[in-house]
Amino acid sequence: MKNVGEAPQEELATGVRSDHSTRNRVARSILDHGPSTVADLATRLGLTQAAVRRHLDTLVTDNVVEPREQRIYGARTRGRPAKVFALTDCGRDAFDQSYDALAVDALRWIEQNAGGEAAVTAFARARLEAQAETYRKAVDAAAPEDRTEALAKALSVDGYAATARSAPVGEQLCQHHCPVAHVAEQYPQLCEAETEVFSRLLGTHVQRLATIAHGDGVCTTFIPHSAPPQTTTPSASTSTAGRNPA
Image (cartoon, rainbow, N blue to C red; front, side, top):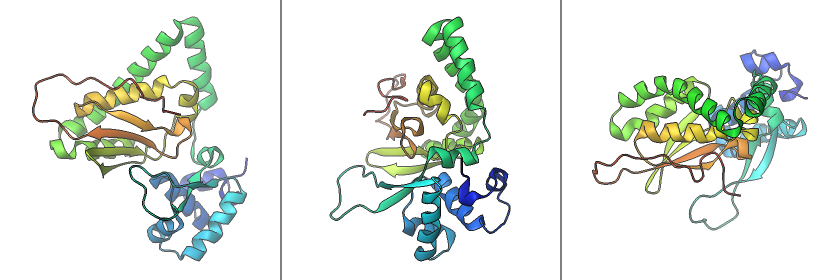
């Protein structure tokens, strides 16, 4: 597997300066912010668009990033959508220092020897519940209108490079990186358990719109604006959580 600009993997992970550091910065910016246009990258990195294109050409050749048509949510504007560049699986692997194979083997053993899919689901929920304790403290300490942003910041501490942004009739929680994406590709119960936890933390029904594990550039969760006060207990969305529409 080629790493970014043929730089050593540890260089990419630590950000050590070298002849390839600018390409590493370009790739890192895509990891942190999701699929990006040339203009986006030039603005964030303080580079000219011509310089960004030159580095992207090398990253595409090295199979670190790939060009895609920009996904448009809502009504399309006139004109052709700008091309965006997203990390490939190879590119994500250059940043990840995970034990994907071990995790998949462990979940497969659980599935085959300890209760099938129900056991995997129970494991996923227990894992997320333990992980969510820190997130719960952050969300509970925030004002109601700031809870999605508080959750995004807590997720970023755990390596999810998450952001919150406004959307029609609600907000979107975007996770630009997923440390367990390759495992979740085979075991979507991990995504489903995460969506359930988000629903409980935010106190409302949420809907997973996209996941990196499904091949999307960003994990995107829609959080609707709170309805007028009603003393009902919210329940998590299970119809699309972790299993994106085709």
